[in-house]
Length: 283
View 1 (cartoon, rainbow, N blue to C red):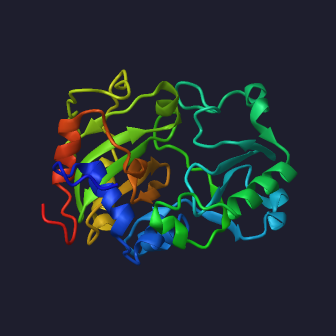
View 2: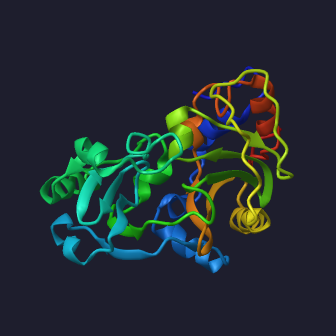
């Protein structure tokens, strides 16, 4: 429900988008396959795709790279890891990684192992699910399964997810994430100048030590600006990899507009919402 009795903060505007905005571009942006073409047209590359299909029985397990992921294009966190021929229920990676974000040793991964038959069954299940009926763009995506390369971090033991909150091409703030961050329940919000934004209340712990700015950060900012140009708001998730900056995904409905998001700091949430000029809604 849209709360009109108080000034609209960021989450309120996400919920308004969910309820009313039917921009035909949104299903393209939310589709994990179609968004790759959208990004490439704007000079931003994504992870390579080795196979796409709608029949999980046709997944060519014997011909896949030794390290890759099975994903669905119409959901979030629906990820299956393929590692040296073995398949694992990966999800968002938190369960399968250590505190540094590295994959656990093989014996510790065993509880998450799937047979190929179970992996195919999981893919069948995903193909027949709608990730969220409240998040309109997901209901307009034709479901497909695809196999995507496993990206390697430019530095460090694990990929960091740079999540840039971008308003018509202007990056207002970014947060950081990774499987290791999720495991330790860390998060951090930074300005585009890599300065920490102090909050009045914290939902997650702050990383210790504080991460250093990546060498590729100017390229990350530039990529987010290009991808967000002409869109009133989109969160652009990017990685710094051994092959350059790569798109993770484009997010239109962060946390589905949950009250008190993206932080527990009302002042920050209001400030972030104030920077979002929603078409047709007086600020």
